[in-house]
Length: 109
Image: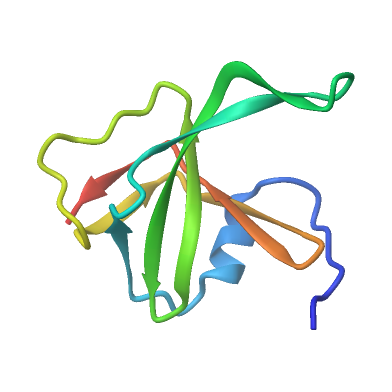
């Protein structure tokens, strides 16, 4: 069952509420860093503009979550699959029962 919740935008408070009890975050490099393109509402198509970068994380013990980073974000050269990290300035929002997370970056533990 999906709950219909809208909390009004990204916030640090929502991240803390939704990820309470999280032990750690681990990077999943299988799909790698992915470009997120903009969307033109008039043509209803994706644009060539890169608006963000996305990367999957495993939040122990909560599960897998995609995290959005700024468009100019680059993976550190020494990062390995399942590396334990701390997100920098994480925020989240809940829309129609789905959780969306974004952060400025991360640091390796």
